[in-house]
Image (cartoon, rainbow, N blue to C red; front, top):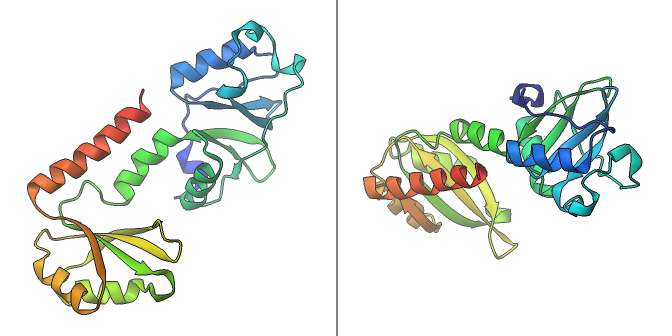
Length: 220
């Protein structure tokens, strides 16, 4: 999926003639902490809530202010993973999207990405979840997949996160079966450290609750 497919149609863009107060009103309405500033279809920069919270300046317009804005954006043809990486790197709740002519065509939101990611990573599909901790230099998804497939299962999705130890990574894999006993034994034979597993209905209720709570927080 590419950036142009992620655009949230109803999300407004600020104009230079808009006031700080108008920006805060829209941020509250659309539950975001950032908005794009656009002039004549040209992206100017990202307005951050924390920079305009002083109510004594609520009537000040952006074209009358000397505020410096971050020019962070993504092109319409870039992959969703690049959108996620950049939003995470800069701690943004929206990401402006430009076309090949550097014209602003819309923005996506953190909430939109979370909704899409939940479907892309098969989080709602039945099956087991295993979290492995491995040394970065030893990571091999093909070997992990071979272990899973040797036990008559397959990986529906996977992702990697950094552990507290920078030399290690946590590999989360979602499988198409809940019975994980034989798979876990095989991982142990290959000296994989199993950090967490989710396989019983109670486990999945807890996992779903965590995901639902995260989505609810995004809606606050």
